[in-house]
Image (cartoon, rainbow, N blue to C red; front, side, top):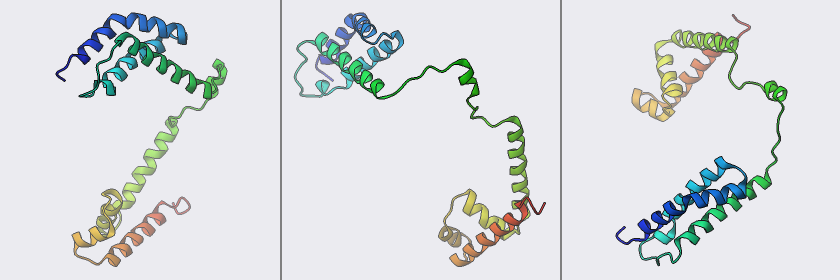
Amino acid sequence: MTDQRRPSLLQSFTEHRDALLRFLSRRLDNAALAEDLTQETWLRAASSQALAPGAAAIANPRSYLFRIASNLALDHQRHVGHGIELQATEEAAAAVADPQPSPENVVLYRSEFARLLRAIDGLSPRYREIFVLCRFEGLSHAEIAERLGISRSTVVSHVMNALAALEREMDPGEN
């Protein structure tokens, strides 16, 4: 940008940053949020249409920055007003399930995965090749048929046979 609007706005932001931060801190009663919104104020100002080529210069950069900060604070307060915040006790927080699988489940999942890989290895070479192309490499039946020089219906048949064989092998009642 060749005009002086951006440097002037940056200079104004630099000069008034502390005042913007105090303004937002008082308004939001949260220093960390005020810091975030102060930074957001600069980002909005720097990317605004006022900096677009051919736009008129900002007559009062300080006022412009405070208006952006005020709007950001108001937007935040509106969003908070729509939600419900609850303070959870330590006991309640401890009762929430951990989203990570337990060590026992990790062992079980790895064991089942290894079992599946052995079952895939046990397929006939042609079934295994087509199954891997379809399920692991994500090729369509038509792409596999073209690559291997066979009909699409043969690919479908081989995939179905491979799935049936894997289902039999993985059936917990069978093993």
